[in-house]
Length: 203
Image 1 (cartoon, helix red, strand yellow):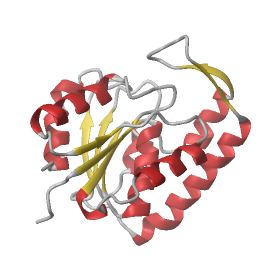
Image 2 (cartoon, rainbow, N blue to C red):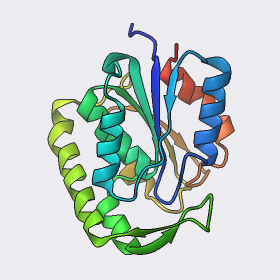
Image 3 (cartoon, rainbow, N blue to C red):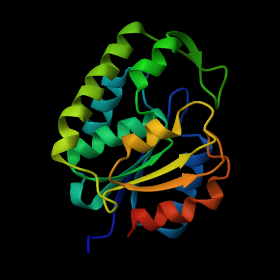
């Protein structure tokens, strides 16, 4: 039996923020039921390279065997990368399996979902940075095969942005909860948050 999780990282998706619905619900529950757990949900910069540098810097001193990462959409892709770097457990919520391919269509000025007045520019070279991270996952993944104990994925067949079959393949080996409907945001997240927390085993 693994030691309880004492440190929890949450990574939001593209055009999202720590104010996202799922991030807020997870944060509130951690605060309410697991006040001793270290919680971190950083605002990620648009550059994937800078985002992962910021995350890895912030994880300095975190016990890898007692930490877990939750990621949504692009954050789910990042969470898989972080887990392969650290050996920690990961929960993916509608993860983006091929972000370089999908986000190539979103180069230019963007707004955040939670605050449309907040603008950022998604640069062409950010797609190249995603390709580097994809290559890392392809290289490290086979040596660290996912297991139901180490990887959990909540996937919606009704996702209007990502293909659930690609997401399922991305989470191969892990414990997968496949929702027949729902959507990319997992609007019915309240119905599934218990399953997520069961996997996380927070202290």
